[in-house]
Image 1: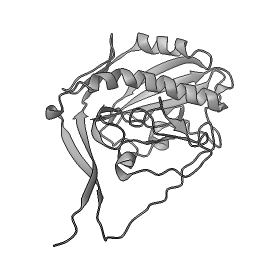
Image 2 (image 1 turned 90 degrees about the horizontal axis):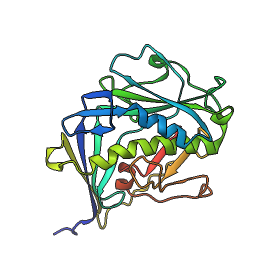
Image 3 (image 1 turned 120 degrees about the vertical axis):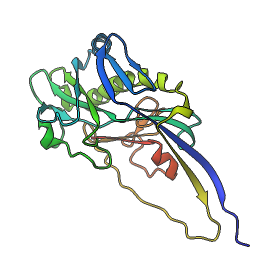
Image 4 (image 1 turned 135 degrees about the vertical axis):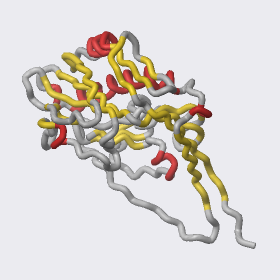
Length: 256
């Protein structure tokens, strides 16, 4: 009889598919696939971060509607939240069918960038159907940030802009925590397992940690979030150990 495997931790990710994204008079997300965006909340959000942000515009980009201008793409962010347990274990609720795309430019038209910018026609700037990017059937919420003069190249301003995006997403996360998991569109279960006597595998991944538009945030409170996390730069770029399930559960947020 072989040596018994040791199950260290279990992660369950439950997905809820969105099919309808619209502007409205409240920020609301429902289990039946509807997401509503309150434009006045976004205006207030920009005012709360007015030291670095001039304004925020929201655009809902439907599948196939990518022949349009975009400012520099700062990120592609899924909407996910912890329901039970900490990162890498317990239960996570996530949304499929829609992604958030922060973009940035300053009041003088200077694109948010460090080594290079990615403004232009969205269909040329964004590759679909790849790991970390929307599929050609997904709805994209363009969270277009106009920075104060010169702020699109300042690390502290970029981080604050990410906090603004995170605050907005958190409104939906709080609602998603209350979703009935039994009604999820999909359910995926992952286990971190020790197999005594078998080979031990360590994957080494080098992450960008330069600053401004090339930063990596780790261990945020929410999957792929910002609040509660810390930059690899502020860790001194020291090695960090992650379990496979922490990696799956959004412990790394690559801000570029």
